[in-house]
Image (cartoon, rainbow, N blue to C red; front, side, top):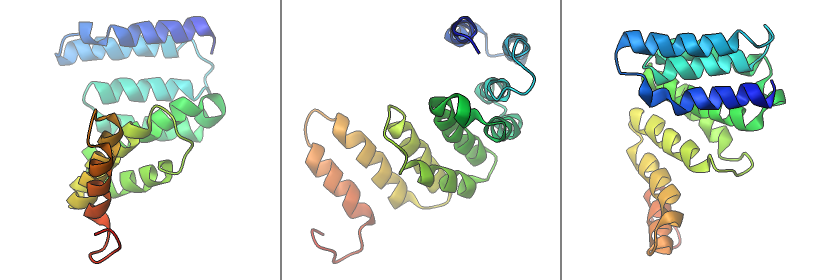
Length: 175
């Protein structure tokens, strides 16, 4: 779409916290998103993306999952690589919420090899949650510590090594 539409969508999301936590207010927020989506061409991948985000953010992961899938199927990657990556992160989180964490792991493991951007830590955080939901807590902790380590004012190398050692086989060099 155009920059004006994107700006209005961003402004609506900036006001998300102004919507109270009742289901009636959540429905009003989703209706406001739907009104913006109605301005898009019918086959735009941005429509299901924004609607999925609205359902997800108002506590309905089950309603968000098919919309995230639709956005990807409609070619969101051709419109925005950044929103595609966001979609994969949010889809994985929603899948975890509805008991399909393994699918979330598969989706996000592929993102570990994607070109680096500001969403790298979000990929790792969500992947850690999915892994933990599957009982793979050492791998989850390793990912979380590895993502945290570069942001620490001290102990960066130590934390990165500890993170690595959580998943490295016993007896491996450096263990």
